[in-house]
Length: 257
Image 1 (cartoon, rainbow, N blue to C red):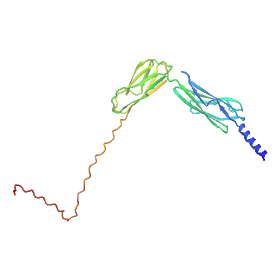
Image 2: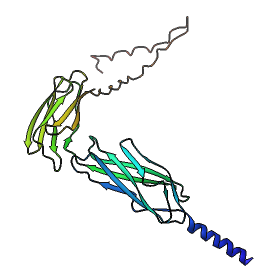
Image 3: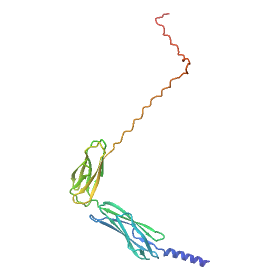
């Protein structure tokens, strides 16, 4: 009996130690591509610390702008490898977060999510990106501030309105800083325009929006409640009218006692 128990115990321990297991050096990578870079590539390294091979079932990225692939389809015990994630920057700026889901035949951890964060330098910073007027409001100009991002040199910018109903005027307020005045021709009707903002020495395009919105209507005044009027007393046909109280005689005047 003891021999059977010992055999089962050893078999259980062997199964635990013999299983496949990938150990990742890191499952999250943050990259800072330089100005002009077209791609940001993240490397996620791993090692099979188990006793049996690990097979990759699938490796897929969260969006079409990112490609992911495994260095190997099968990783033997003790072997190392990596999954690469290639993010195509295009005209994207700011912080971009992409994920890659890796599925293997590991019993304990079949799916692993890898995160690639790319902090892309932003050439122009715009605030606000939306200006609006209420319908019927005085058409005074409103200001959008534009300034060059870190490590960027911008001498001039060009602002174009998609609608002739809005006029724009650019004024330089400092080195790499600009003020854009946006003014509608009228506010009597609903209008909208996309403002295209470009630096003269860069092909990248930035956008802001100008709009005439519906003015909120004032709530209706509550109706004045009138005091209820007592209904007139109705009498049956042919019934005599109710008697009326006799008039009080006037007080005597000019009498002496």
